[in-house]
Length: 222
Image 1: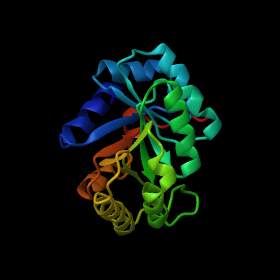
Image 2: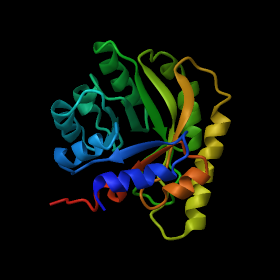
Image 3: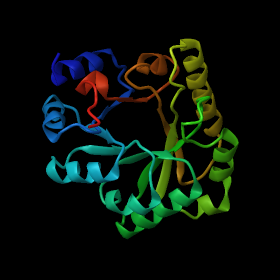
Image 4: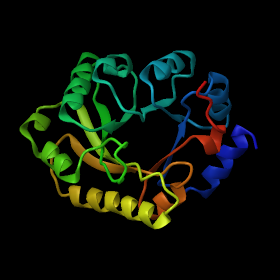
């Protein structure tokens, strides 16, 4: 199937409250433009440099999401335009995003990445660390960022019961965090679910899914 057909197929199955992020990392601008012409406006990249290059070449009504692990020293390159940063897992990074957002006279939306997987390869904060961060004085001083929800990645496994358990943990955490009051913490988004497990993620409460290979085909890392 073509990129357009893949997109239409996925979108036809999605509830209205779920946002589809088309994960376009390693894909050429021509592929992204095919998705754009099919109506897709939200794209996710995991390398800032690649996202900047695509941003410069593509229409300006696109929402760019940074979905990969973020290096503090590269925040400045995406600060003028990035719509949402998914993988925030420490206060140092938040302070850097806040600093660059201020320079660009913006408030940048972010998601806190919670470690729900049992694999050691996944980034993220523990639930306690995230709670402490949101309630901290350092966080309350950040006027140019807004935490709009949580993000998590399940263990890479065939065991659906384990994936379901991890997704449910993120949803439960999200619900418990809703009682925390802070001007820069407005939880609305739960970003979980990728090509292989997004249907299960939606059943477990996801409001944002990150889908790449099911839209664009397998990635070429050469």
